[in-house]
Image (cartoon, rainbow, N blue to C red; front, side, top):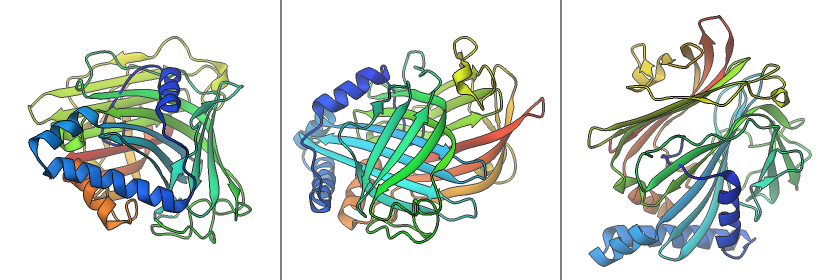
Length: 371
């Protein structure tokens, strides 16, 4: 659970509600920009206006967000976030694609979810599509995913809901449209919202690796949820997957969930099946963070199959989550920061190692709120 926090019902129900409630599918970049600006303006006016307007946001605010990632064997990481925001009757779809190349840096591309995304494939997998601002279409497919996980009640808050849609899957990212011939290396023009690096999704072929996805629902703007710190991560080892979340609240309460899956046939072949149901563990405390650099040091994660050490390979992103790369428009960025409050993010790619010596890859992050 990365992106602020949240949780809810089955994936099929979520998708059906998304498709049933979504507004008309607008396709032009101009319409997208207008949507983004109007949504940010609605949030900022309500948060700074009268008591009546703030109540309207509390009753009319709904952010539904999907986080999905792919980690290649060489450490190339791609993160996709699709979101549908409703504020006081204004519906705004948006999406962000971020690539963290194995040789360092970060590349960011803005867009919006294509109507019907996500969708279930005939082979049981999931497919997510984004129309990017340079006229291309990104397609992320999770093949033969491990079944979804719904953490036990109580939730973090009545206003926050989260579940893991895809704990583990074989994943593939590809592009279609103008310039799609060069898929994951240097040279593609990206238009608005480009961060550092040569270009999201350029190169010789599709990115393949291990994948993960989760959903978050927020019924209040993040700054009103009473959050202090979030630590989250997904860990893929050769024969098991571990997902954990720990949330510290401003009232001193802590909410922690952890689940483990054993994958039959090894994780190179998730179609081999899962050995039984996920084992959910509620631990009294966040994952322990070792080393002098706090969150960027080694993490120790408790798990039914034995503790897992997360040894950082590199920092993917550190700083303000709502930065100029993700939110290039000043008005949109200001409105989003007003809704979220002050936040600080450290996102890491780490080598995972357990007591048997088995190794794998982990994506994990720490987010501080109100600092």
